[in-house]
Amino acid sequence: MKQALMVVGATSHAGKSLLCAAICRMLARQGWRVAPFKGQNMALNAYVTDAGEEIGYAQAVQAWAAGIEPTVEMNPILLKPQGDMTSQVILNGKAVGRTPAQQYYEQYFDRGWEAIKEALATLSKHYDYLVCEGAGSPAEINLMHRDLTNMRIAQYLNAPTLLVVDIERGGSFAHIIGTLEILKQADAGHHLVKGILINKFRGQQAILQPGIEWVENYTGIPVVGVIPYLQQVFPAEDSLDLLERRGRKPNADLTIAVIHLPKIANFTDFDPLEAENSVNLRYVRPQDELGNPDAVIIPGSKTTIADLNTLQATGMATALNTYVQQGGTVFGICGGFQMLGETLSDPDGLEGEAGNYPGLGLFPLKTVITSEKLTRQREVNAIFPESAAAITGYEIHQGRTRFTQSQDSLMPLFEDTELGYVNANRSLWGCYLHGLFENGTWRRQWLNGLREKKGLPPLETNIPHHRQQRAELLDAVTDIIEDHLQLTPLLR
Image (cartoon, rainbow, N blue to C red; front, side, top):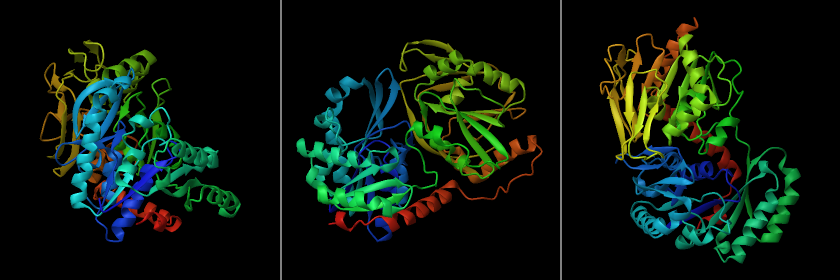
């Protein structure tokens, strides 16, 4: 690799993913052929590349920030937690097994490191610069010997490293010093840390300046930036971030509730709805009161049966049925779509205990969980709402869904009739297509159906794909970060 930069965080949620995206865009603006990289990611937000390979969604956003299409080499290892301390292992874009945490490194460390080196070799043939993202903290003493994504990669690439600290958490100076001291004691590449960045700062920098000077004098490492707290809503990588997204649009016409399942997956599906000024999106935990929103979305899940059981145990399943009977609108996506049916079967125990499980009973459907995982990009023509436009999205699911009786009461949403359905009075919707709401015209037509029920005027439907809004967001965020970050000490 001709050039590489490593970004690690003193803590989780320090803002590494966003900063890597902005740095990719900054370097691309300078004319570099730049690509993102994360050796190993643990996330339930995934994206499917053009080749049908599964990677972390954050790396897809970073690729778009760099002006390129995502490929599997940008994230060769993806771990998708399934509960009971187990994860599904995605290696080079394909599911290769499920393993308990304590056995993962015994089974996959060597294979994973080889996959990482091969991915780096491939990227080096096509790009001038690599922006690498770490995971969590690089100073987890108990994990250093099996690190596949932090300083092992920085040392392998001899990459100047940026240490990011979230000042909003408090104790940021201690986080900086503690991280550096542990790296030094462990001889884990501390000499590669060439810059410190303070993120999410609120207030006057003059008040912070004495602390900055002390850190620089003590460590000998420059503080290369102080990034202000950004108000822009960026795609979240961790579901914990979702519960903090509240109350930003008090004048919104519509309220849409998303059920915050314990293993919620691909919640980036709803970023386009959150970007709508007319929509107040709120996340509701299964134990919370549902209220009376204009629509409820049951999202994707990594453990569909377990999350369905949670809905039933907490009473949310009953609340959803009552909500539908009273005229409410429910939309299930992927795992949420499967939950809407009559039964879910897991004959091989792929999600846990083998057996048949009752669904919500809102659609005459039965789903069987299968070992074969379907991951593919899709472009299909929409049948409903009234649009013949091509819809883009992607599928990620283990399961095949079939009707249990006549489907005369349901209308297919797309020309591929297995992708999704709506009932006659448009109160029940279900589909397998992630990224559906990114299609601007389709999204607005669906929202206008909700608005019509409330007697509200329709929204303009001739709008672009959400990718344009995402590009504008990336530009806006990069402009701010570029004004507050001095990359020179980290560039060779």
